[in-house]
Amino acid sequence: MNPISDLPNIAALGAIDRAHLIHPVSAWRTHEQRGPTVLSSGRGAWLTDGEGRELLDGFAGLWCVNVGYGQESVVQAAAEQMRQLPYATGYFHYSSEPAIRLAEKLVQITPASLTRVYLTLGGSEAVDAAVRFIVQYYNAIGKPAKKHFIALERGYHGSSSTGAGLTALPAFHRGFDLPLPTQHYIPSPNPYRHAEGATNPQAVIDASVAALRAKVAELGADSVAAFFCEPIQGSGGVIVPPKGWLKAMREAARELDILFVVDEVITGFGRTGPMFACEAEGVEPDLMTMAKGLTSGYVPMGATMLSEKVYAGIADGAPPGVSVGHGATYSAHPVGAAVALEVLRLYQEGGVLAQGQRGALHFAAGLDALRSHPLVGDARHRGLLGALELVSDKASKAGFDPALGLADRIAAAAYRNGVVFRAFADNILGFAPALIFSEGEFVELFARVK
Ligand code: PLP
Image (cartoon, rainbow, N blue to C red; front, side, top):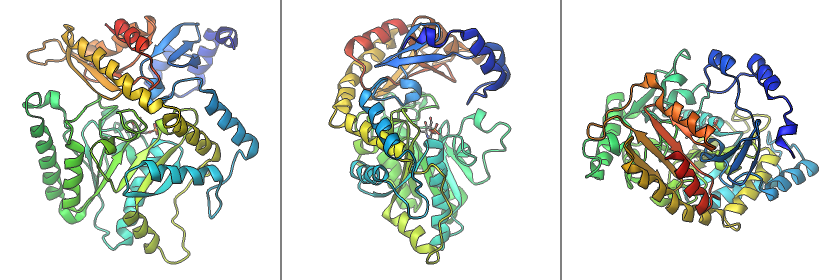
């Protein structure tokens, strides 16, 4: 395929895009002026755009293409499933072999507490299902007052109508009448911005646990349903808490008698080293959400996993024979499930997970080396998830005026220099390369970033 002849007239395509296509998370009028960046093909860790420019993708699409572009076996799995049975509803009592096998596989590879799988079309829908199942659960077990949800400041849990309220980023609330009165936040566990973060990681953990306890006390223990968190906050600027934080929060949630929901949409599937971030700390959540690396972005799919306790509460709470009214036409889509099964095979038998763990050493070395750069205040990472936080003064950690749009300008310059990563608020540059990055590609990435 020749990407250039495939897109014979980028300007014409751009004009149509500007006139008709609404882009997720974009400034609509700005986009009409600016026009799209059209991508046309991908291979391994590399993208080609509509103008024929080669780009090293340091962000795995949107932290999802963990196995890299152009994995032929994934294409084959999708094509074979489409040929055999492109669609089978999961409604009522229908099922399909890929969905069944995927559910079994996910139960095998996630923490032992999780025994039940609801397959969605992505992360937002997985979070939305989790919230609805939690509400259903407490009503079913006779604790209808437990309706309040606590999440982290700067957290991201997608953009469904309730999930966007658990997301704590201003653009997702502004004009949407969010957060709901039942949605609350506690500060992020951010070592760089904590007074003792550099010398005493336990202080960061203790502050977080104390904040959760205080918030539950403020709302009333009997009225709090759940605590939602990402093991490492992604869209909030790749905030890497100290090791042990997730476990401490899990224990606190148990003592406070609230459900502990881990959103592994980004951190799952080898992004932080092990298959799931929970694994590294032996954490067994009550619910888990996942997406992205599940299919490596090749087709849309996510999942919400439940513990037996939550599942049984809902299952036994409904009157016999009465449906739990939650579902979508494309829930448990067989093509998504077939792709997920092949992607999971690549992580395990295909060695991609192990490759990512080896690559993480080069990734860490590349980011750590940039710590001495005059603009870099903090370089942080776990596995293949990392960020550089830019400051105007390393001693005071003062940032740059947001009006400068520094991170966006750096990301735009990097694009022209053939490398893609992501700019976040507060002058943060985020990196999430595919697990198949070679040593040479890491060298290339950080040389260009520098
Ligand atoms: N949860 C987390 C932690 C995410 O990072 C995202 C997306 O970036 C979502 C949920 C929403 O997933 P999706 O974009 O697939 O709807």
